[in-house]
Image (cartoon, rainbow, N blue to C red):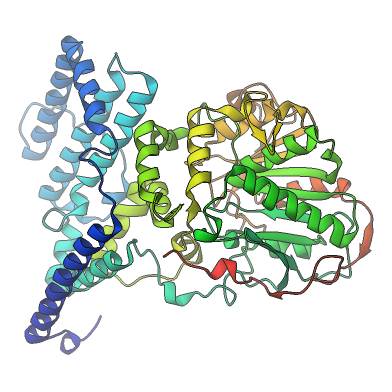
Length: 588
């Protein structure tokens, strides 16, 4: 514990508060000026929530008896809660409200007043969400939108998020003489000036030094991507090389964090020649990029560069998230062009092609959201990556927003270095045209699974024409690409398909190295028609799924050949050391 003499004096505290007040005023003036010069004027209800709430009210009014019963149930449990805390006779059982990690500190249970505040909130929020679920007269999209935004509202109202109702914050304020709030206000103003929430000590990491640090060379580039070839660590390698296509809504080094966690480094160590695509952080130079651009100038260009450079007949490919969706389009286009033999196998990490059950992200695909995004990106031609980051954080608001509001702004805690959070904060811009196509054509209209509904470079595509061997990985707790949705890939390809369900979610379900032994995975050789049937008949395996994938890949990888030196091939040249320039570009 720090000595009392280390605490700032009252004069120092007042001086810092005065400076912060001046900074806040200056930021407000700058924001007002920027809003005027940017020319973005949003309507009073850009998300169409007024219409949604109107439909909710109408649905509630259509069945007053059910609503009255729910209200009666709530007041019964609220009375039981009050009797429990007041110690009144009657023996009314206290409602079971479960466990919530927002209230894990002992003070929430040991101090009766705060225990009552917490329990009252949990009880009210449970009934509020239950009320939405029981309403008739709402279609599924309307219900999902109302439920999502009600959950945002309910989460925001948690007593843990406010000074006066959080015993941990009150205790810290007393112990530090308000220093926690001073530090928190400084952190808040800093985040407002940057336009994003700070989650970790970003100064502790540097791309190319302790993340994205696997040795390699940029050997090819165009306006859309840089192609990295990694230095071999084995004398011999498999004949068929591997190209990894990460999503361009994030940076590629999620697959190359620390040496222990790096999927790329592990693949190199297993004797694969590994290439990774590092996408351009969207700016005016690629504002015209569409889905077709990513297929032709991205996927096909990278595949052809590796085939020609190494003199091989085929490659293995991996597509992660949106890159997996686009990989499916690419495979369908190659099949239509009689070029399918160029890809020996295709692996999909947490990807979707059928968006009929795509989870909470569907909330952001209605006409109101699409119009909002077009307005936000109209002038620049690309969507600011901070908007995308906020969207994904809203899917797990308690973990990825309010947790940091409490720790950073109220408790004034120091940031903890964490490579995964550093990557998560390293946002990327995306081309507006591509984003609009993806949201409206796939999420909203689900065109990819309709044969011939989409065309690339003038060629209609059909996923059923893809006969390439496929390995599909999904995350059991994935909130971005739900496992049930990813399983639908198994229904749309005509070739052999292997499906594997990994423990954890969209990131940790992929980044699960053998050394950690943190999660498990499930397999089922029967590959039944439904995801539920797959789970029911699946066998659980402890540890990392990476070796399982490698055992699937190796029989298709050809003979053993001498390891290749990066940049030594036809059309491949050593441009600069990995990780290259593109990955270091930041959002504006």
